[in-house]
Structures are given as C-alpha cells and as structure tokens.
Amino acid sequence: MPGSPRANFRYLAFMQGRQFSNDNDIARVGRKFLDLSLPKPEWTHTAHFAVTLWLMRHRPDIDLEEKMPGLIRAFNEATGTPNTDTGGYHETITQASLGVARIFLASAPARPLHEVLDRLLVSPLGDSKWLLTYWSRERLFSVEARRGWLAPDLKPLVYDEIAPT
Image 1 (tube, rainbow, N blue to C red):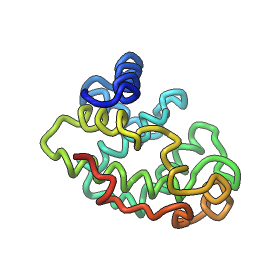
Image 2: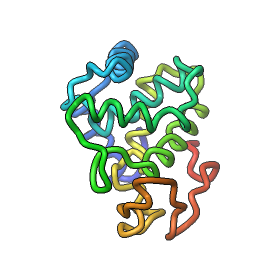
Image 3: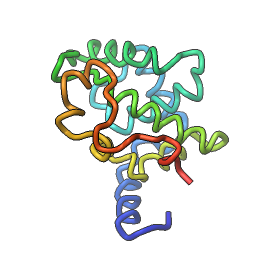
Image 4: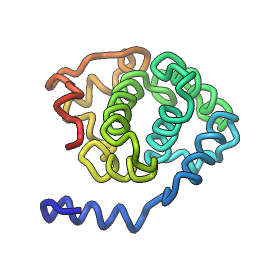
C-alpha cells in the first residue's frame, strides 16, 4: 500500500498482526458476538470494527445506531465487564465508530469484508486514538460522553471529509 514511510510502516506492522484474513473469520466473530459466546480476549479493537462491518453488510435488519448500544452492553455483561460510568459501553465512541465503519463499507460495496476492514485499519481512523483528533480527552472520557452522544469539541466530525479515496 503506497504512501509515506510512516504509513508503510503502519501497514507492514498491521499485516504481521492481522486478526482476520478472510470473511469467514469475520462472520464467525459476528455470530459469536450476537449469541454472546465470543471469548472476551477476542473482543479487540479490530474485532469491534469487524463485527460492525459484518452486521452492516449481513444484518441490515438491525438498526445499529439504535441497537448496537444494547448489543454491546449485553456482550459486556456476558463476559463479566460491568457497564458503568467509568467502563464498559461508551455511547460517543460507539456512534462515531459506526459512522466511520459505514463510510468505509460504502466506499467499497463489492469488496470482501476483510479487505474493507484492512483498509479501515491501516487508515488513520483505524488507530484507536483517532477520536482524540476530534474530541479532547476530558470530553471524550467524561461520564456524559459515555452515557450519551457528545459532539466533538476540537473540530467537527464530517464523515464525507474523512471518507477513503
């Protein structure tokens, strides 16, 4: 994947630690997330995006903006992670991440899901700290942001401007 030396390094590091190399692996994790049988150690940053992309493509009957909060809370409870004001489900992060996943999926509707996931993860938006470009740490990790959507305070999050090219 061409780009700056930093982007090339990030891509090579990513490929070495790649969690999903095919769509069947993504589907397995998606189904296990839904039936609450996914082992907690498999619920990684990458798995969050993999499950989201899988649900968007294969379960259009689920309104993710509405239902994902309950799905994540149920998964957390099933794996012993309490949903509190300091841990577990986080509304602002979830809703922002849904928007990112949606633009990446829309940019490549015919590509295999693992390729869409790879594109997302090697982009700056695949970094777990990407939200701190838009939200201050204090605002993003506030109780209010965990409980409900809080708009960014550093710069507007305009999905059309961050869509992959």
